[in-house]
Image (cartoon, rainbow, N blue to C red; front, side):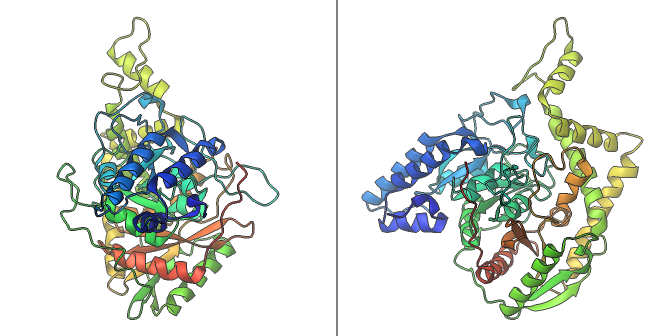
Amino acid sequence: MTDLTTLGIAAIRDGVRDGQFKAREVAEAFNAKVAGADALNAFLVKTPEHALAAADAADAARAAGETLKPLAGVPIGMKDLFATKGVATTAASKILEGFVPPYESTVSQNLWNAGAGMLGKLNLDQFAMGSSNETSAFGNVISPWRRPNDTAPLAPGGSSGGSSTAVSAGLAPGATGTDTGGSIRQPAAFTGISGIKPTYGRCSRWGTIAFASSLDQAGPMARDVRDCAIMLEAMAGFDAKDATSLKLDVPNWEAALSTDLKGKKVGVPKEYRVDGMPGEIEALWQQGIDWLRDAGAEIVEVSLPHTKYALPAYYIIAPAEASSNLARYDGVRYGLRDLPEGAGLQDMYAATRAAGFGDEVKRRILIGTYVLSAGFYDAYYTQAQKVRTLIARDFERAFGECDVLLTPTAPSAAFALGEKQADPLAMYLNDVFTVPASLAGLPAMSVPGGLDKDGLPLGLQIIGKPLDEQGVLNAGLAIEQRAGFTARPQAWW
C-alpha cells in the first residue's frame, strides 16, 4: 500500500471519500511520522488524539452514508499562534509558557468544522518576529533540507518555520501559517512548498495572537497549489468578532483552478531587480516569465517606484503595532509572572517582560515604542504610514496595466542557522520581496520553481489584485505545472 504520508490534502480527501483507505489509517501514519521527527523541532505540542478523533468521525460519517465534510480525514499542523481550546498556545514565547486558552481561534475552528484533525502545534519565531525560526524560546526549527555533503543545519524560513518544515518533511499534508511581512511565503520558498497569503481580511484574526494588527493575515501552507486552494476555502470567511474581516462569500477556488492564462497580463516590476541579486534568482525569475508566457499570458514591465521604501516603512509600522499589542503581557492576568521579593507593580512588569520576551521581541518593542513616542511620532510613524499609502497606490497603478505580478520570493535560498543572527539588518533584508504586498494588503503566493547550485529550493512569488486569490492561484498552478518541481529532502532525521 502507498505510504499515506506521501499524499497531499486533495489525495487524502478523495481517498477517504472513495474508500481507498480509512481516515484513521491516515491519522495513525502521520502521528507516527510526527513522533519520530523530534530532531526537526517542528512541533511544540503533539495532539495525536485530536487527529484520531477527527479521523474516527470521518470514518463513522462515511460508514453511515453521510456526505463527508470538505477536509474529512485530513490531519494538519497548527501554527502555535492560533489559540486552540484546551491545548497550550505560547506563540513560542516564555511569557506565555503554560497558557491554555479557554477558547478556539476562528481559523482553527473553521478547519475543525470542515473535518480537519490536528496533529499538533507548530514552532515559530517568537510572536512571529523573525525570518529564520531562530527566535523561538523553545529552540530552533531545523529545515529538513541540507546542502550536499554538509550537515550544517539550515533555516526553514520564518516566522512559519515549523509549518514549512512539517509540510516539507512529510509530517503533515498541510499547515496553517500567518504572514505579516512574508512569514508564509519566505519559509515556503526555503523548503520547496507552496503557501498563500490571502487579501487582508479574508481570514479572521480573532483568536490569533497579534503581532501587527494591520498586517497579520492567516493562510495555508501545503505541498501544491490545489492543496492551498482547498485549505484556504476552509479557513476563510466573514467573522463578526474581527472588525477587519471582509463580509464576502468565500469563492470555490479549487473548482475554478485553471492554467490557461490567455488574455491575462503578467507584470514584471523593474524595481525588484535589486543590486547583488544572485544570478540563480535572476535566472529563475526569467524562467518564470517564460513559463507564464507559455501559459498564454502577455508579459509587461511595470513600475513600483516606492518599493525601495517598503522595508524601512514596514520596520517602523510593524514594531509600532507590536509595542502596542504586546503591552498586554504584564504578568497580571495570564502566562509568566516574575515577582522579585519586595517588588512593586512596575518592578513586576519589568521583571516579567525581561524574563519572558526574547531579544528580537524586545528589539522590536523598543523600536516601536521609540517611533510612537511624542518627539518622534510624526518623523517616523506618520511618515511610514504615508509611504504605505504610496506603495498601495503604486500597486493600484500597476494593476491598471496587468492582472498579476511575478517576482522572486526571497533574495536567496535557505541560509545556515546562525549565519545572519548577529546582524538584524541582514535578516530583515530577507523580506525585501514580500513586504510590499503585505503593506498593501494584497494576496500573494510562493510556489517552488527550481533548485539552486546546492540543490536547495527557490521560490517564485505571484502578487494579485485585492480579492483576486483566484488569479494568484491560477498563475501559481501554471508555474507549478511547467516547473515540475518534485524535489523532496532526503530524510536524515
